Image (cartoon, rainbow, N blue to C red):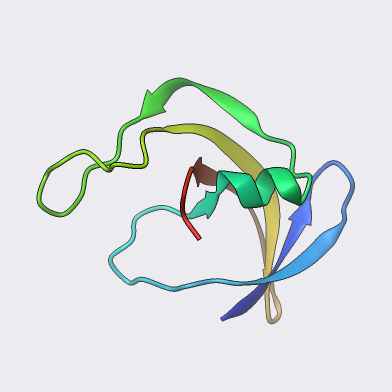
Length: 89
């Protein structure tokens, strides 16, 4: 599904494809992608350690950054924070 992401500080918008997962509880985006596109990262105080379905820790490591964006999808617009994780594509 294609959506628009807008940077809060510059109001610059990009269009990206996102994967929907009805069992997901959070939004995540690749840290390298966010840095390459110039999103303003926010370091969180306490890293969030993600677990896989089988209970093991995710090999990509903890979530250490978030980014605040406006998300556009068709006629809907919403401001939200997205967690950053290394290695996700």
